[in-house]
Length: 308
Image (cartoon, rainbow, N blue to C red):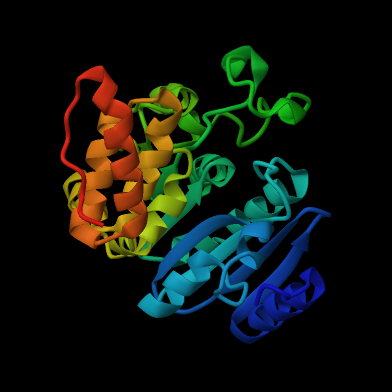
């Protein structure tokens, strides 16, 4: 799958669209893949490079989850992080609304992460009473409102003040929205605060790291969470129940380590490594733990080395 070219990938997506629904080019930077199946519609926003980097034959996450659940899917795919700010994308959703597409479904769920999380929230306005899952979404990159976010200087010249612009306002018609973020990621937390609304549930995940989508996927939680939403069963309690499963996954411990290492909190790092060495019998954690034991000893912190 890793040697699949962009042209081969696009040919495959086009074939899927012709077989199950439609595949449409939306200007130079976006495409839409629609698959008609059951009475639930999962609308996902994804990045092409992420699809080409996976071992899922280039299939979009939303498409795969919908296929497994017997649901319909609509996947908007950007060739890069564009935040889907393009008139061709606006026109596409306008056409779907005019055709009453979203009215044909018993439930509509929007999903995205990062720039795609922004889009999931912003475009959910086309389907009143939808459920929205947004991981680490930006509320806007308009410098007048979010000039403090200096991560994406190339987007400063892109308008976030016209149609589908300020994502939190676009959620006003949603039945419920879930915004997942790590409160220790300062800029993500500041964006999350802008989403505060009566119908929005903020789900802080401390030490989830800079890429919550990858972390949740590694813990086998991401697809379950989206599936629960498609079933109409996702709640804050259900999410926390799923999220607790991450503690039993070695990928979560690796994420914790990456999060705290820049802070040089050696004692906390040692506790995490010891936990990983004992619960997962992981030599890498054991070696790092024993090294940290040596580093902490001169500071008067005595810890027993783990047997090699």
